[in-house]
Image 1 (cartoon, helix red, strand yellow):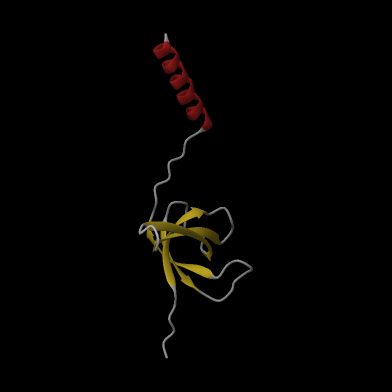
Image 2: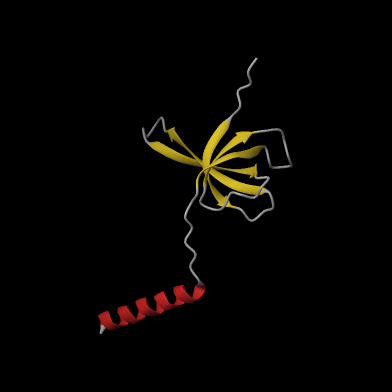
Length: 108
């Protein structure tokens, strides 16, 4: 008797907790009335025992026994490491100043 183990593929959206990641899984659904495909995004808390998964990583999670109040999934594998761009607040302020100066020059 083989068990049907559920698995999902999603993107890590948060890794701030210890040994836990939040994975967003996108599932397309077809709307019966409007005949359009709608994206549904569900977030799962998954156990990451080695703290290897980072934000923007593509991971496969599998269903497991309840590990805590919210955790019923664990990270089985990291499929692809994501690239996360880190921008400092100083860089954002410089870009905003340049934009406002450019807009002021255009209006004159």
